[in-house]
Amino acid sequence: MPRPAAVMTALRTLAMGPKDKLRPRANKAAARGVQGKRRKSQRPRFPGRATPLHLPAFPADITLKRPLEEAPVPAIQIGQLLIEQGVLTPRQVEHIVAVQKYSHRPFGDLAERLYGVSPQAVEDAWVEQYLRIAGVVDLAEQQIDADCLRLINRRQAWQFHLLPLNRQEQHVNVATDSTDLVRAMNFCMRRVGDPVYFLIARRQQLRQFLMEHYPVPAFIAQFADKF
Image (cartoon, rainbow, N blue to C red; front, side, top):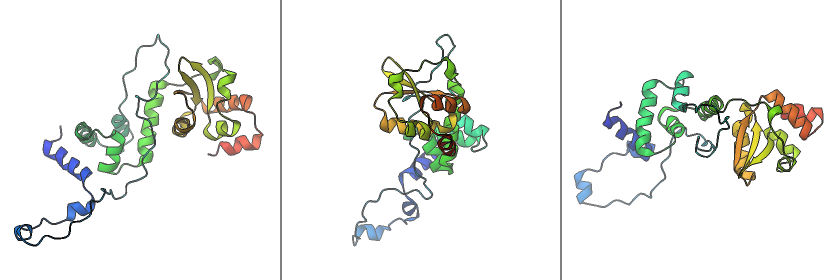
C-alpha cells in the first residue's frame, strides 16, 4: 500500500495549481510587516488537462442486460484493464485507488491528473469493461416495438448507430455497437427523456436492422459508417 505521505502529497497536488507549487513561502518579516496585495483566488489549473469525458458513472447510472438464470459476473475494474493494456503499472493503480478513497474522484479522472493517462485510453478501458460484463446480444432474438422506433429519427439512428428496441417497466432497451457506445450514451442522456438500458450488438447485424427499420440510400449508410 502507498505510504500515507504519498497519498497526502497527491491530494495536495490535486488541490493546487502549478503556480501554487512554485510560490515561495513568505518570510517572517513580511508576515509581521507590510501586507502585500492579496492575490485573487484562482481556480486550480492542471497543465495538459484534456476535455473531461462525458460518461455516466459505471455501473450506477446504467443497467447491464443479462439473462436472469446466469450467475452474476464480478465487476472488472478499469484499473486492471489499464494494466492489461500497458497504460498503468500495478503500483500506479494502487496509488490511484488510495487517493480515490480520500478525494472521491472517479478513477479515470485521477489517472488523467496524476499520471497523464489520455482520455481516449480511459474511454477504451471503460468500453471494454462494459463489453466484458454485458456481452453481445443477437438482435434477431429481441422484440422490436414500433412505438420505441419513433423515439429517434433516421438521421439520429444512423449517426449514433442506435436501435430502440422495446420498453421494459420504466426504461427503454436500446441497441448499439461497442464502437459507438460512448457516443450513443451521450446522445441518449441529452435527448431521450426515459432511462435507457444499452444492449451491445455486432456492428454488421446492427447496420442490417437499421436499414430495415430506418431505411436510407446505400451511400448514406456508407457515409454514416465513417463516423
